Image (cartoon, rainbow, N blue to C red; front, top):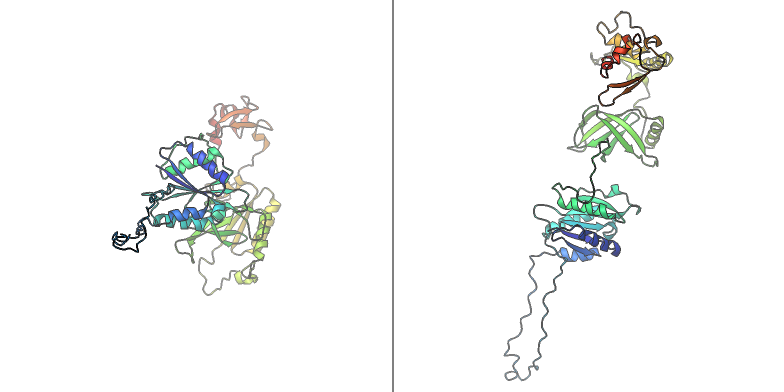
Length: 421
């Protein structure tokens, strides 16, 4: 038997809720409506174990007998005492509370904590569970829904109410923690990728990455997408990053600092980040302006084999001018770095990763040219699921070749062309 309490000062919305809940057709569903918060608190915040005040003890009948006491007043017939008035809105258990934000003073979080505490204190909580909370508010009331998030708030519905949405949500909430099949709205299976987001604390921010506070460490390489609005800025940034490392938070026990490196950071976003960082007190872009302070010195007294390690960096770009320019800049700005450039990824793979590679003097393979195809333009229709080739336009002749293979054989069956991948 679900019991629902509503605290809504708007008469129209309150009547609407009562009418909608009747449509649920739940057995023994009871609804108690309150226009004022004070009404609800005065009725429910009372200890049921408190004894009722004792009735006044009437004087002995002998004292009122005029034969014994001539000064006694004439007897008056007493009026019948009406039975104690019982408020039917007082439920022993409250399964769901529906309240409007403007009815509780606009501060939902502290009010939820107060209600949950008092409902348990005065023993109105459901046996083996807790009272569910449903908040109603207008979307354009100037209060962000992010400011209303609370662990005990089960749902938020905007006013004016959508009847079907309201009924379906109430049905699901009343069944929690059990799973219930929706009986009002149709649930359609959709196979589509979506984003699932969470709100996190941003603890560190720089030109190249940021660190968030998280209750668990995250796996290195895990991608993340962030929506960030910096202080004093109106434009919301959309950033992508990958986890670099996770370490215990030095200031918050049980929490972790998860470092993300920016992945493909656009220049406008970088400019906005630098603008925001420059406003911070004691901000400096570099740890030290002295280049020599970070140079490697072979004669360093406390140097180790690790500090003297040389790294190799490969730059692959079809534009040889761009790759050479980048290589020169990297070599100039960083020591212990050997930079190599390649204009072709296939040549890079053959030179450094094939057997006998790693700088071998074997003759590199001939780059692909137009002569390796039987037509200037060839269009392949490929199934995205299994990568099978469904059609080729234009179709090959018996003597046509495709990358050194007989084209008629290669495209004779949908799966044969996969040998090239």
